[in-house]
Length: 218
Image (cartoon, rainbow, N blue to C red):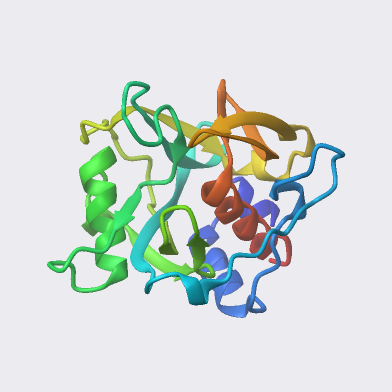
């Protein structure tokens, strides 16, 4: 895994191989799951039979060499938005009728949100789908690599900033902690990544946690 973290020779092929060999379903990192006030992990189950068919969505977890190894760009949403204000996420969104497939949607969203050109991305695989009950989205996380650090800018009106998360931070136990915060009018206690003044939780954190599990066996 050290070769991947430091963007050593063949790092893109190594990530593709790790994804191809990953056992499915990929185990979730329980440190990132919601918790009770007593600190116990809770796996609240939603009965999907009571929901309409989930809307397809996709996201792009893309990696490229930074100053000290591979980094993952995250988007910070404007704080004055009506939905998900100030939240941090991977580039992504719903699959439109005009998209050829979910992968095309992830690449389109990455261009629209952070100015990442689709032709520069090598899609090397995907992680397990994440169902988001509160919005009833079925999210497919794709993993992509870019050989050199791109010039990224917030393109979407909803994105206020781009934060580069070092891949190595996913393996730092001090980066993950349990926090209490408000979401959609509810008080939530859950594990979150804390880095560079931002907090990553929910579906994005679970996606990053899955990816870390995959790489831990590489």
